[in-house]
Image 1 (cartoon, helix red, strand yellow):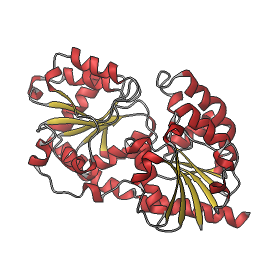
Image 2 (cartoon, helix red, strand yellow; image 1 turned 90 degrees about the horizontal axis):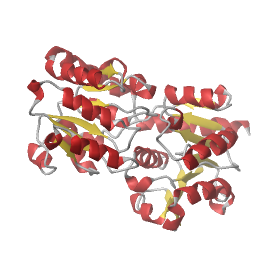
Image 3 (tube, rainbow, N blue to C red; image 1 turned 180 degrees about the vertical axis):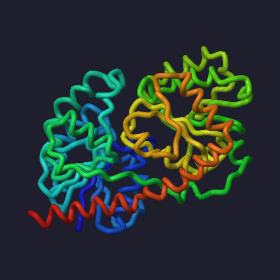
Amino acid sequence: MKIFVSAMAFDSGRSGISNYIYNVVSGLAKKAKIELAVLSSDAKFFEGMENVELVKYPDFFGCPAFNALWHLFVLPFRPAAGKCDCIFLPAANRRLFSWFSRPSVATFHDLSQFHVSEKYDRLRVWYVFKFLRKFLNRADKICAISKSTEDDILKYYNIDKSRIFVNYNGFDRKRLDTEYSPEKLAELRVEPPYILYISRIEHPGKNHLNLIKAFEQLNDHYSEYQLVFAGSDWSGARAVREAAERSEKKERINFLGFVEDSYLPQLYKGASVYAFPSFCEGFGIPLLEAMYCGIPCVCSENTSLEEIGGDAVLLFDPKNPQEIAEKIELAVKDEKLSSELIEKGKKRVEDFSWEKHVESILDQFTNIRSRK
């Protein structure tokens, strides 16, 4: 079987969707031949991957508005898509087809535009409301990465539930299986104790501001703690940095920027607690990574985070900084509870793997092809 895959939403390898695309392409390539559409600057991430043939497009195609429309109305008719057995779109909430010439599966990550009204500009909101609603129906199957995402698709788009399947993301255990090294962590200019949040610096969706407010409300027992943000600047980052600069605890708020994979195990394993205050997540892979690394986790009681965390996390209202602070303190000071969360987290992550995710996609292709 030969599968056409679009990696046109790869984000230079610096986002959750990048993580998703790389891992799913890698998994699919172990079972099938892949024809991968990719921007020239992103091709390096996939070069040398067995069974993957790259179809490179100039970087100027990466302009979001142009690329979204080109992806809708031109790419579906290019020879690369037409000569394959199946079509897989790994980021359909960003890059969709207006027409499918082959059996198709489209992964939909979230509909955050309906949860965080100020997250995107009017053009992108219009695209989500008009184009996605119209053309998502044309895919044979829609892969929702959480029950929360499925619920949103059913609520906001007129799509039959039988066309949607929930398929949880996995996470890369191998990149986290590194022994903790304080010396390696020190290279990032970080030392324990600290509260960790790994996410692109985006306002308002990722809710850094309320985590900063919660950090300010921690009692004096936590005066030595740092608040560590790891992630690239994104839309609205200036508001987050200005809030940190105004904070009375600004000397202990640490922006690391984008962190390479080799440092992530150290960053997780050195943390006292992982906080995930996002207003909306389609899945939330860092939550699994933190649990796998043995850190107590606290997170928002909304969208997919409660679903993914299960009973292995402490939940809070992301709009309430005081409650966020209370849950952080509880996860740190109550040693019995902290140990329970860690043990539950290690058990919880056993339910998630990229192998399961990829097999589910391949099963869908087999079923679709058998009916056509």
